[in-house]
Length: 257
Image (cartoon, rainbow, N blue to C red; front, side):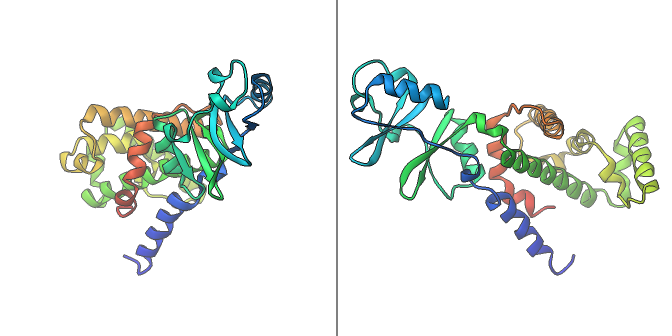
């Protein structure tokens, strides 16, 4: 193992957990004065297309309004406290934002000690999130390759694959070699191929930390769909719980690639 292997792992972990922050995807929180009337608030909602507004009193944002709270009279009495919606600090990581959004369609972000920004599930379509998710998929594939090659030296994992899947991988390796790309055979497998190898080996499967093989198979399909959507710039639909759980295990995953 190269002497700098540990430092490479640390750099990769830092890039994944700290390379992007929630501030890369937030929107400024629209604000209405507490003394302003409902009509003013509705006009701001129509302009910004955000269903939440901050309510300012004495120069500070002290609460928020939901679209359904805006009916008549002044905005101040209808304001809600921030303690019933997740509030993140401005240095929060994207995994922290995903965890907050798993249980709430929106969360607020405190900037300079005061709630000043908002992030919602629709913000997953933004470029920083796409880059972060693509990194997650890449790390998962590297993790599967590592545990397979450790368990099956000298490409002995070929015996586990079907003939057609192995033939396809060999063809891809040949084509990439013809283009001058030196590549391992295992790197020519599809994500589902790697997952099938692992699922057929109980010891390897135990490293995935899934409760059942059915759950693992479902996660693999979702990851393949996610990667395809990322590659083709399609809108993303996420399994929030899965993304949150895997991001929590990133320490374990990175140390195995």
